[in-house]
Every structure is written in structure tokens, then in C-alpha cells.
Length: 130
Image (cartoon, rainbow, N blue to C red):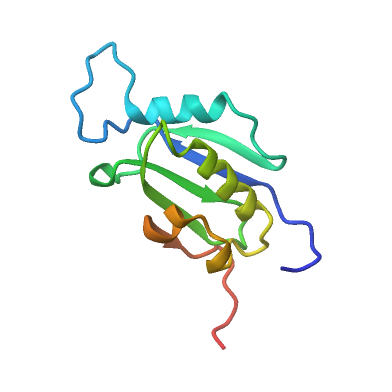
């Protein structure tokens, strides 16, 4: 990591996820419950929590994405549970925020991030290949 101050990060959570369950019309979807569990906690400084309508990852449980700035990679993670993963997402968001390129060193990543990365999207500004 460099001495530069990283740009703020954003944690996007799919609030429409049903995680394959039947949810009554007036029921709370698992994705909404995950978002609410996160919203009830304090986000790390420099991390914004944002609800999104759908991340199109319906077959892989609840999903969230981490993004931040034009020079960072964006990550989408799946198989998230509202009861057991809010703290993991907060930890991962803080680690992501502390990077300038979005690449959390493999050994530092939460185990769930290592095994449940759905997509890695290149930054908007990509340097020339080496």
C-alpha cells in the first residue's frame, strides 16, 4: 500500500434478494434484512453503505459489492447471510477502503471473500499492460 490517502469506498447491498425463499408480500427479504443489519452498525470512516435494487446474482444468495474511485477494482461477493455476515462485510469494507487499487492482499482477506467472489471488475482507469 502507498502513503496516498485512499478514496472513500462504497458497500452496495442488494435489497431485493430472496435467497431462493418464498417471501410473503409484506415480508422482509433476506437482502433487505442484510442491509438493515449493516445499517444498524457503524460503518468505518470513509465507507458509505448503499442499498441497490438487484445485483443479478440471484442464484448465489445475498450479494454485495465494494467499489471506490476510478482507479480501484470493484468486487461482487455472494452467499451472504444477514445473521452471520454483517461484521465480515464491515471488516472487508475497511480493508478495501485502505487500498488505493481495490486489491486486498490474499492473506488479509476474510475467508468468505476468498471463496465467494462472484466478479472482479477492472477500474475505469487502467494503465498500459506491462
